Length: 139
Image (cartoon, rainbow, N blue to C red):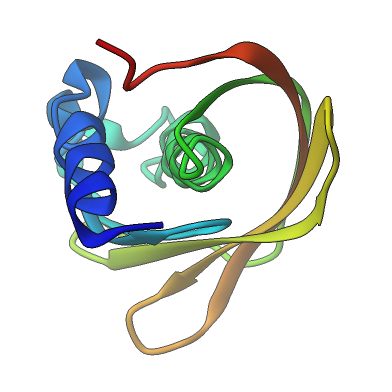
């Protein structure tokens, strides 16, 4: 992938309104890989006063989307599963890392981890995408 194409993809991902709403930052993207961060805010807690699983899942899902679309080909999620292993508190900076495990003509498989910025695992995910016959950077 050329530097210009990579920059166009990075810019496109940084314009995601939902990720922006949650304060996510795309730190790195390259073919089959992405790294994102988010600080858990007070308005992301559930009725137990701990971060809502949906907020953590959203970070993992966004990293998954960035990695799976990083080739420039439109990819949409077919399945994603998540296992939560550690609770965090508001103010914690989370890092989601998505890595491509398999890239086929029509499907691809990704492993996503969500960890604290100190390296403690918070959640682990696997996701499968369908790779459409379109390139979202065309035109």
